[in-house]
Image (cartoon, rainbow, N blue to C red; front, top):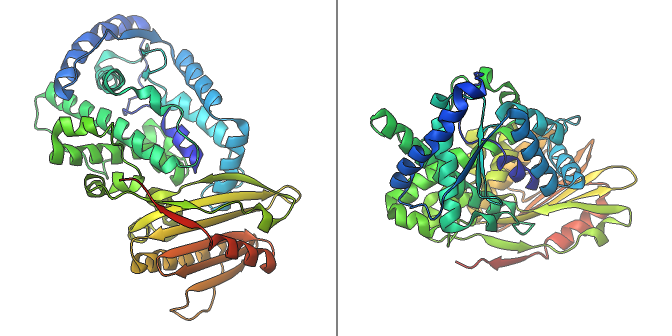
Length: 426
C-alpha cells in the first residue's frame, strides 16, 4: 500500500466549501490576512518565524497542475500499476479501478492552498472567499513554521520499503498543523476549545466532496489518517509533554502507525520489529517479477480486514501488531498476482486473533469455506485466484495469497518461515 502515502500528501487538510468567488472578491484581502494569521499561529504554536514567508495567489488550474506535476515526479507509472495490482489482489479496489485517474479527479475537487517546502512558498487559492480561507491559511502557515524549525524537506525522499513509518511521520506533521488550526479557529470564535476526536466527520462531506465520498474505503480512510488520527496523536502528546515535548518528536519521530493510533506506545518508546524475508523469486519461477515490498503496519492491516469483517472486529485483530513485511509478485505470462506476508505480534494471543480474523476475511473475500479444527494453526484455501495459505506459529503469522500450485506454495512457505526479526532502535 505504499502509494497510499503519496495520495495523502497532496490533499488539502481543511474541509473547504466549494463556493466560487472571483479573485477580486478574495485575493488581495486573503494575502493581506496571512501576516495576521501568521502572528496568531506563531503565538499558539510557540514557534517564531525565522524568515518571511512568500505568499502567492494561484488559480484552481494552476494549483492543480502544480500538484499533479509533483505527483508525476514522485510516483512513476510502474509504481501506480504495482499499487493497483496489489490492492486489487487484496480485494480493496475493484478490478477496473485506475488510481491515477481517480487522483486527478480528486484534485479537481479538493485542490486548495498549500505550502511548498522546496520553494518555501505559500500558495493560496484565488477563488475562495477570505472567510473560508483563514483556517487553510492557519494550517499551511503552521507547515511553514514547521519547515523553518524542523526542516520538512527531509521527509520528501523517504527510503522505500517502510511507508508505514513514513505515514506515521506525516501524521505527526499534518496532525500538528490540524490541531494548531483547530486552536486558531476556536480562538477566533472565542469559544471553548473543542478537542479533536478520531470519529469526527463533516456531515456534508457527500454533497461537498462527492469524489472523496465515493472513493473506496481504503483510499478515503488513508487520505484522512494523517489529519484525523494525527490530530488525536498530537493532542495526546501535548497532554503528556507540552509543546516543547511535541517539538522533540521531530527529532524522535513516531516509527509506525501503531504509535499514532496508540500514542502511549510512542510515549513509552514501543518501537516495531523489523522483518527481513529475503528474495522469494527463486521459489516462484523465472516468469515472475516483484511488484512491491513494504510494511502494512497496524493501520494497513486494519484497512485490509475492515473491508470484509467490519471496523470493530478488524480494530481488535490489528491491535497487538509487532512488525511485518509483505511482497507482491506478478507472473509476466498469465498476469497472476501473489502476495506473501510475514507478521509478528506482541503475544501469541494477539497472533491468534489476527490469524482467525484473516481466515474470516479470506473466506468472505473469496467466498470460500474451509472445514477445519477450531484450534488448527494452518489453513489452506482453494480460490478462483490461486491458493491461500495462512499459518500461525506462536507469535508469528505467514500468509501466502495467490500461489499457483501446492509445490510453489510449499517453497514459499519454507522461505517465509526463514524470515528474520530484528528489534528496532528505541
